[in-house]
Amino acid sequence: MQIVRDLTCCPAPAAGAVIGLGNFDGVHLGHQAILHSVTERAKALGAAAAVMTFSPHPREFFARERAPLRLQTFRQKMALFAEAGIDYCFVVRFDARFAALSPHNFVHKVLAGQLRARHVVTGYNFAFGKGRGGDTATLAQEAAACGMGFTSCPPVMGAGGQEVSSSAIRRLLSEGKTAQADALLGRSYAVEGRVVHGDKRGGAMGYPTANIRLGALFRPRYGVYAVRLHAGQARFDGVANFGIRPMFALEEPLLEVHVFDASPDLYGKRVRVELVDFIREERYFDSLDGLTRQIAEDCAVARHKLKDTGI
Image (cartoon, rainbow, N blue to C red; front, side):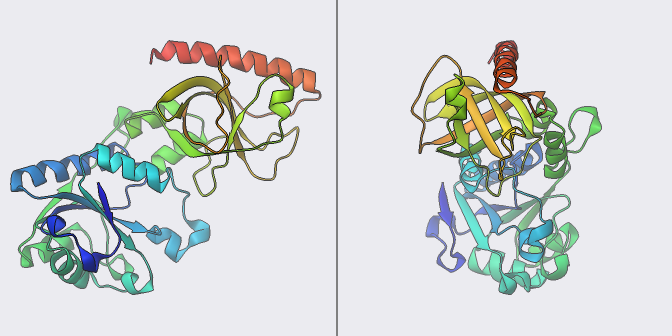
C-alpha cells in the first residue's frame, strides 16, 4: 500500500479510485465494513481501492485537551488498511485551511478535482466540511453532481445489539473488558511500541520485564493482564502490568511485560502486545515479598487464561 500525503501529486494509478472516508480509529468491525465495500466496488469498477484519513484527528485540532486518545498507532492503522486490500491511503493534513473548506468545495475541489474519485464510501454518520456542515445526504447530492458514485454503510451491531464504535471500545477497555472489546474490533486489542529500559526491579525479583510507554495512545484499565507479545515473527506468552505501580509511584503509566519460558533481547525493538484478558487491578503492597508472591500467582493465572484461549 502506498501512502500519499500531497493530494496535488496524486499518483496516476490512484486517480479515479474508490475512496473510503473517515478517521478509522481502531479499524473496528464498522470500519472493516467500509473497507470491504471499498475493495468490492473497486474490483467491480476496475479501479484502485483507497482510503482518506486525517492527521491530526479533527477533534485533536479543535480541542486537543478533550480529544479521545487514539486506540492504535499510525503504523498499526496502515498495516490494517494494507491487510484489508487497500492500495492507497491519502493522509490529509487537517489544518485551519482544510477545516475551512465548505462541503461543496471538499467534494468538488478535493475528491473530484484533485483525486478524480469515481466512487466514495463512508459510514452512515459521516460529517464533513466547515463546522461539520455536510452529512451523508449532502455528500450523496454533491457526489452525484460530480458524476461520482456514493455508498453509505449502515451501522454494524455487535453482540447484544450494541453498535460497534471507537467510543464503545474505549469504554470497554477502560473497564478491563478485553473480550467484549475484541468482539467489536474483530481481533485482539494490541498495544504497539518500542521497548525501553526500566528500573530493573522486575529482574531483581526474578521477573524481568520488557517496558513500553504508550505515549499518546489510549490507556486501558490499570492492572494486570494475560498477554501475548509479538516481536517480528516471534511470539511469546506472558503477563503484564499496566499502570503506575502504586508501590513505586511512577510518574507516567508503563506497560511492563514479563515473558514466560524465554529471555529474548527486546531492548530497542518495536513489539506488539495483545491484552488477552484482565486479571486484577493494580494495588499497593506492604513489602517486596508480598509483591513477589502476587506476581507468581498472576503468572499462574495468566498461563491458565492463555491456555484456555486455545490460540
